[in-house]
Image 1 (cartoon, rainbow, N blue to C red):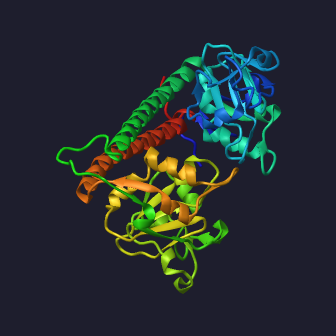
Image 2 (spheres, rainbow, N blue to C red):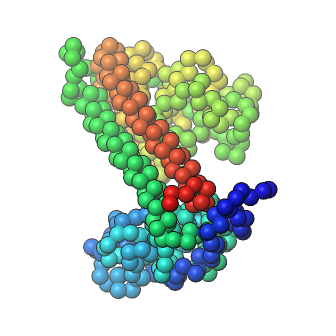
Image 3 (tube, one colour):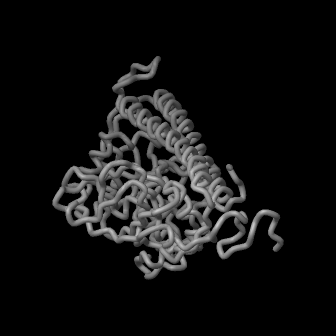
Length: 427
């Protein structure tokens, strides 16, 4: 392949002629953090970072840490300073191993075990924070990761990784500034999204309990146990390994747990729903999900997940099988609006009843019988529709912001690819 004028072919790809390639170890000195337990990370006032926080941090630079240790623990841990690069030394996959953040804060902090620290003696640390998470470097880190169930990467392995490097710190700083501005926009959008979610949460607690009434409604609300409004049945058991892209739509309880949505539109989400290759004659009719059905999980590893559920939107009657560890609630009456169902089981009053009826220690389970005992307070169908409309508008606004965040992240990824390879020059 012909290399265009002003560029050269290197072991890390095509880069500008006035850029160099260097091993990461030439930038400074690598150190290893020292162990900080989960208990110790909440035992005092001195900031610290554990490797898990690097994975949960979205940006490539970090200014402060949430965990805090005591002076006693700090005395045995590795101190970090402004400009240090922190790598997660272990992870679940080779693709994620070695996630990096550049520490650009001014506070005194400490690093725990499974963190590899690079103290650079040259270059711009913010630039390195972005570069070390770019595809050029991530690919090399993946090739050097060791292990199966848990993948590890050592300081020596990291130090041998080859990186492209602009000659001047001024160019490094310009690239870091452009990417940092993109991060700032993403962060502001995420904060706005979080604020909108909190507003919606407050509106739900008021509108769905009758504490706040919409204009034009004053009728008394009804109060009924769910077993007077629904019939309950189980799903068809199938393991995740049995699912594929072929067959009929199948709702695995794990997909309810991991989703932030409380409804599934079968028609619009058809391609993304896992499939089970089975003859429908082997599926009980009560396990086939219809428009307006509510599907609860019957087991969860935490209290919050005990009341997890989705409402089915399936006006085209596409075959949809409810699966393992699910409880299907089919309406006996027309007392609840289908859109209102998406919200009415999310109030604190309903969740507290699910917690009360759940049994178990490590895994909380709830039975069909006990779900039927849950008491729901609800207004007329007309007020339900009005409440659902208000909340749906809030959801649409949040969804639009989430889409904007996702698009901005994609733009940032494109910027990283262009700027960190020198394909686009800022100075």
